[in-house]
Image (cartoon, rainbow, N blue to C red; front, side):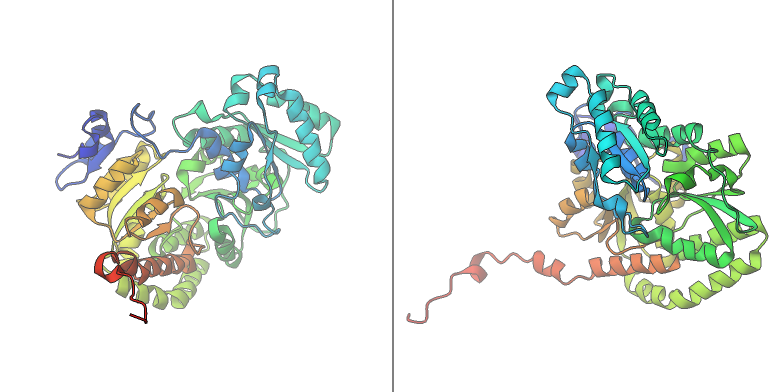
Length: 472
């Protein structure tokens, strides 16, 4: 029985096609959960919207760009300061939010004039910032506001600014994955190739699909510096708007998050002939493998081996300390898409942790192919999981820790199950050698936190009887 209909889904039997239990002796290609499909009416969903996929995941990470959200203020608030994307310029991207603050009257009479006014106000308030991305949202797309025409007019009025538009309202796709795709393709078609890059090394690459969560990009940049590799553009962690216009100058595209950013790597290969190389950056084994692949491309294998040896000598003893204490820990991963297959083998091989359940919010079929191939038998794989399904799966597999976002994390804490923030991290970075030690530390602190036992103790009854006063 590879596909599973949970008890909570008995009134929505279609959900059986979205949940797979891996067992021995099966060709898992025959039992991939349906994914990247509309949420079944009548069930809940943890998926984000398409606008969120464009703004929150990719565009909003840039460190020197005004993010103008053309819509109600709620769309701006919902995507502001919800992930930890630090930058080396004082975290500009995390401090501010911009919105046209559309009201009912603007929806009735149109919002283009309000958008134009908001763009000029933003540039006036921040005269040192000359770059902007404008996003449509559901209401402004429904009324047909032409944000490209507005952007063109503002650039004519201000020749020193450059504006990129993303027409991807929340309803454009079944999940935030659509927003990734729209921004990727729009950027390469409209912006890449506009600027030249100053080449300072024989070895150049773009690092694609890393968003500097908790400082990931800045940690990995130390590796590239030691190897003598110039990164033309980071897509988009700690990145700049103009660097992303120079992506065509790199010799190699290194892809980390294939789901959010593989599209632009494919187009760079098609349009400019730049080869694509996929790596995993979480875990000692995967990080070493990634460094070896990159160094093999450039013919600097000796440098790569020296870097790996240096980092492992520095961090392996600490990782081994955590591995000894985490052996046999049961873990569930409920995140977006590719982190399921990025993490499952790394925590099992490098930490001795057993992954017992995985749920994806916006993964595609190829994401499930990878994670099921890497995962163990007896593990549940779920597309578009909802709260009731999570409760039932928890009873079935009894995880010791759950890697997920704060929304689900706050829910499972009430069940006295610890969680590690798999979206914004607890105490990152988590990538690279040092980062994976950080991940192991946060997992250890979660699992062995003595407050868990105290929280699970019911103090009602005799233990909670009122204390008699001294006079009695």
